[in-house]
Length: 588
Image (tube, rainbow, N blue to C red):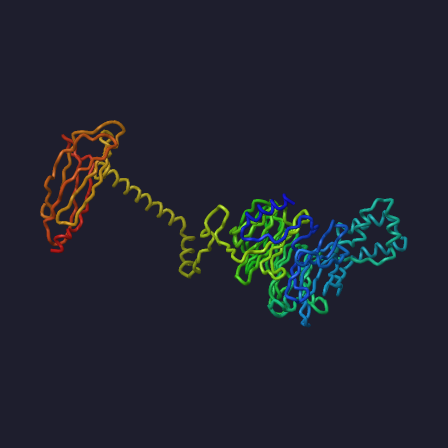
């Protein structure tokens, strides 16, 4: 117990937004997210946890109902459950929901925790050639080995698959075939499919307590919508492959969408107006989780990725996960207007995603196999998880918990994933596009010609500046100098500071002078020419002089500064100083 409590303490620290309500590592619950639901079974406002327990796969297959931390009731199931939903099947008072458990070709409906109805899938069409072969075997017209050869030929070529009886016969050893034929030849051939997934669809209203229809997917690729009272087939749709995961939204009498992940690695979207899929999403790997969040579909795949798609199959984003996905569920808090996707991973973590942003991580003591979020008891924000070892974890969301929309995982910023509001294509845009396609070669040549001319003009200007020393940096290797100027004052008197630096590594520069060229009608300088002392490499030498503005018209001009070497007429470098307007004279 001490190790368990220590483990729970670490988990609590890691996920401070949650309260650890209950943890039972030996609850012996083995189930998946499709076989777990929260429902107010007695209409008393207190939700119970309904679990289709797989047991060991052979025995202890039960339907368990939890209230609080204890088991309220248990019912034995005849076969492994593939799905479980809670739905309202009538308008009678009190409004108590029924539980539908899909198992094999049957749906067992429980009401008030007691068996209420059993629905059986309709039988499939039997291959007439297969019937003929078994009729011959019944009349002893062919021996078991001939029967095997004929059934193998049908299995490889027939469009209608063989029945389970024929497939079992083909698996037998030769010495067992005769007894099998004697045992089964008098019985009629039946081909029965099984249920692979189950969902719930509101019939004519979107209210939470509205009557709902059952939606079931079968192994042979059919999707049935059942009437909630008579349990007759209201609508039938077909898929190219066997469905494995299902999400249903809308109302049957108005408009609905059924999003189905199939065994061929594709996702199909069915709508009311078509018995065939309306849209198809082709995935790069097989889906292991499917959740609808708002108008988008979030899919977890085997290649440790999470994808977001629109209702029409357009890919929006991809998030890469640190471990394989084990299960997925929707976290919906209507009171806060908050929705997120809970993703259970094989590294004992549950990640919470909002779009592609990871907003929270929950550490678990074992790998999570099923997740359910909703109202349990009288707590709205309850997270229920079962683990690979059969444990049961119950966490309650704190009322003060706040989830930040910022991505807690390292990566690009959120702004990068925001779609740009690109305007629609206008007629002018289309015409310009066609013109560019027709004249692509000529336009490219003209662009290259203009670019070459621009480069040539820039190179000529640069060479001219170097030759005439019009730049503030010296191009001479013997006198590598750099100069910048600072003008201070409001006028009419300005202080002009020249900062000269020798950029050589170790050689000093000497015998330099500075000369100023300016408009004598606008400015006067106390010293327009003076010598520069020896310049030590790396030091900055400030040289100050004063400029007097003579004009009262509020105009300014450029003062040129030349750094000269004694005995040479060409300057080493030149600087043009844009003098400011004299504000002192302007005010007077």
